Length: 399
Image: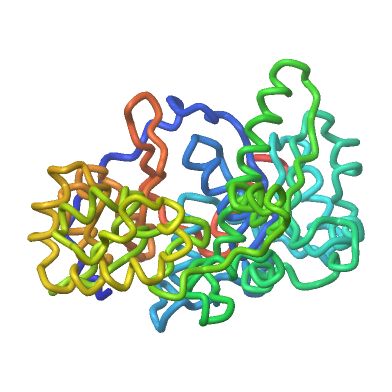
């Protein structure tokens, strides 16, 4: 969506970092791409100081990971989105002096995050055992593609490939479509979120025992965890594979009417609803044969959904909402981003902000999904240039 289509919004004043729960903690983020940086982004939003370690010649590879033909200040929008308000220290990991400087910085760190391929961090001499030796209180986090054992360890830990191996693609789309990947890098995001949870728990334990920890997760583990509900059904249901609906599928294990239906002027989502109640509201005699047979709501869901779809197409979304919502039917208009951002519901959440830096770069992006003591943290600094804070950091820590 063009920036001109986004409703105007004002950036709230930057949060007083001293009031946030992780204020005073130092995170050294040696990761790149999405999973690790997403983890450190969440820690930054909670008040931690994040120093991002980048190669002097090009920095984080996601600086060139373009989602579209848009770049800002020479970097991709995804880099800006996931690295706002961090500091950048340029370190050449092949240079002995730079490695020594990084080890010295790690002595002052509270948290370290890395998502190198398995074996790389050990070759650099920056693995948990080595860092723990110089900083026993360190909370060290490792994110991989598939863990650190087994035949997949050396395979690329990339989101689409992890989705492919996780089984999650067989929950999307209609039954006849084959595997359908999510339209988001869900493995990266979920692994980063899981890592942040583990780090926070380890910091709590450190506050009690003064002991550090090694927190580990992977894209595959996060994707398996995402499916815990349906996998539990599978494991206790004779291990039958799920069968998606052939018609307007929305959940492999849920019966009709669960799905999204085209109305006269858009799309309407209808969640779990008893068929008799829906049949009365939609004035559908065609559903009479299914009223008293709840098992058919699953076994005959394609036929039921086809009938419902035909009826929904006869009225506008607003007409249907006026009928269904007062009757407490769980339903909603399906919005695109423009409609979302123009909606009162979204605007009351106040989740957009503008961040900038002194070279004129300015970018519209999201804010933290968390509120602390009723306040959503806000940081007005954009993502750093490669090594932007190197001189200041080196002077501060005597590197």
